[in-house]
Image (cartoon, rainbow, N blue to C red; front, side, top):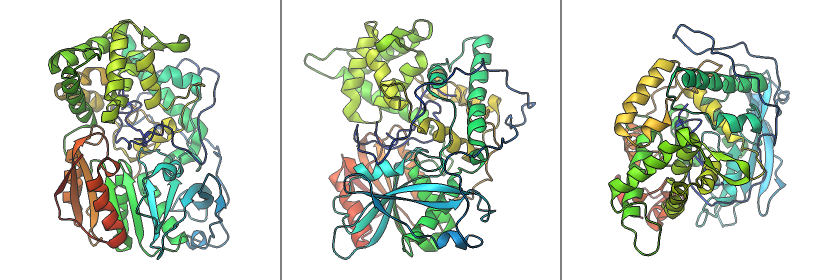
Amino acid sequence: MPAVLARRARRSVPLGLVLALLLTACSAGPSTPPAPSASSSPASSAPADTPTAVPSTGGKGRPVQPVPDVRPAGFADPPPGRGLARYAEQQINWQPCVRDLVCASVLVPLDYDDPDGTAITLALAKRPATGKDRLGSLFINPGGPGGPGRNYVAYFEAEGLERYDVVGWDPRGVGGSTPVQCYGSTDLDRFLSVDVSPDDATEERALLAETYAFGQSCLAQSGELLQHVSTEETVRDLDVLRGLVGDEQLHYFGASYGTKIGALYAELFPARVGRLVLDGAVNISGQEVSQLEGFERALGHFAEWAANRTGDEKSLGATQAAVLAEVRRVLDGLDANPLPGANGRVLSQQQGVQGVVDALYSRDDWSVLADAIATASGGDGTKLLALADAGNFRSADGTYGQINYSFPAVRCLDSRDVSVAKAQREAERVKKKAPVLGPLAGADLVCPLWSVAPAPKEPKITGEGAAPILVLGTTGDPATPYENAVGMASQLESGLLVTLEGEGHTAYDQSDCVSGIVRAYLVQGTTPDDGVRCQS
């Protein structure tokens, strides 16, 4: 389990490395967007028993366990009828919920291979179109995986898109839809503080046991749901939703991990692709720039900025190298000597790395990060711990956002990772390319130790036959490195690359140039030249 959790779903604290340097992050946005509802773990829970040793698999696979017979909230009987058609005949009953939004819920099959079996619930929110000549629905997803799409509707930048109903949904396993559940806040506090870069065999055994125990808690509370939260199933849900709102083609905006949903939709349903915008692309092409390398790159940009500040700001060093050395010194020191924070809490090394990573999502947070590091250098971990809490979706009352559970559940079902040894070898490789964060982030052990097997392998994504698809990439994106966007635009047969030269995660709401291109495409169908570049 790496030590940083890149999963912010547009700074709704969000979105979307630590439960994961897990896969793809999320997008960045306002710090306190309104939300139709919130979902978090219990404020307290009895501490779990001391984690037991990981069952031996002989190094040949995950420690898969029997699926318990539990029914998470949102399991239901299917609608009347037979087969998948029974779901297409539902009527969406929109009701006022928050401000100018309306909300609803619908049913989809838990298992698309068994559409007459158990159903699960999807929760939706919509900002109805106000412009003349309505264009249909624009579905939006903030990333994660595990970001709540209903919340996204409340703060998505929809100016100029008033001819669309803007619709967000909590994907299966997420938030107000049938949610993945794991253990509560007490255990999560412990889990998110564990040393993920062990120094000896005892610490390594503890890390393996804690990581395995976390997955076991998810299986115990989520049961069969844990086998059915893959991206491919979410894409099939999205096609059901497209039909239920009456659209013949899908119009879609996906940020960060949301780009994978859109790209896979184009692969599975190319003839139904309308206008797709994919911002902050994830890696579908197999290129070798890891997420951690993206954060290391952004940390270098931050260090250069910090070294060149003038005025009364606290100095972290006069050169980029000096600033990086100070960041490393502070984070290294947390291993043996966690720092005191507010309310009797302490800042662990894992949380310190998470705090640094969280602030790298947006250039606007660099001054906050500089102050937090300087304060920690003076012996006070309060500000860096606050940044870690934001990245971990921890509220002041000690509750956690449900994304802490949905994020690994979706990611690990999609992942083919089954080997602890391979994860450890990959961590050693990344250390060489991320010399500050790499040694502290640890190996990504969550998926190799997950309690259910991977979903069937996804097809290669080319979107053959799909209409033009816009792929947006930011050159300094920390969470989804720019190379991902280049690779996705190239691999999608109809992909068109739009580049923002700048810092921060995702491009759409950072640049009038980019947002103008997106609006012209979504509203008029105007496609830009492939490779067009904008400035931040």
